[in-house]
Figure 1 (cartoon, rainbow, N blue to C red):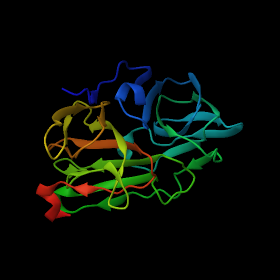
Figure 2 (figure 1 turned 180 degrees about the vertical axis):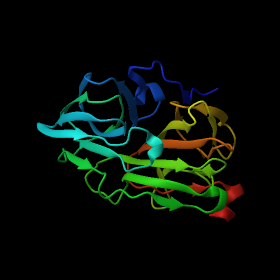
Figure 3 (figure 1 turned 45 degrees about the vertical axis):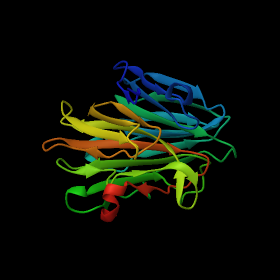
Figure 4 (figure 1 turned 90 degrees about the horizontal axis):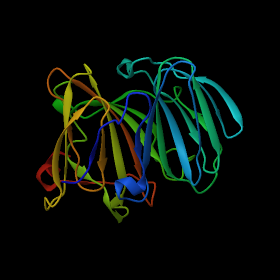
Length: 264
């Protein structure tokens, strides 16, 4: 069985660390850091560009030689308010000090251009509906391809109501054949409301050589190296996930699974 499902390896400090080497791919990295008030964390970006997403809580952040002040607003991700984020280019330093309990996602992918550091959100991020019926979900786009300050990263948040499907109709982005489809690796950082709930994520290829169905719990990460990757939120459990995508071309083009193509 492929090791696609990553459980948090703790409750404090760095609780997820997914690298291209550990995931068996080339582009996407994802860390999750949980801090208490007054605690600090610092890293260098190296060859990667980074988007820091304040999933929950507040922190004072310095990055790329600038003091960005206190970022963060929502104390629970299911408030659904726009996130406070910070883009940090390659070959830079960043540090933060939590002012409340804080959960910070560190989204990574190759950086090449040394763009300027910049705040992302909450201004300019608006919760928007996608889909209809039991396929309705709500999106906070953080850095999709219409933003030109990234070299590789594509980052978005998705809120899936209880009883609904998401990342559906099933689709894949695992070939480098633009404009038909692009190759993008992807991570899903999942949260559930209530937190003792569960969701379902399936990752499968058309030939079913990869065919995994996973129960995901609050705080889990799923890696999607290839194939289709729909999610289901059972009745009674609301699902959130933070997506990080990257590949050789910063474009999101996908192909629907044959059995659901008529739903697109």
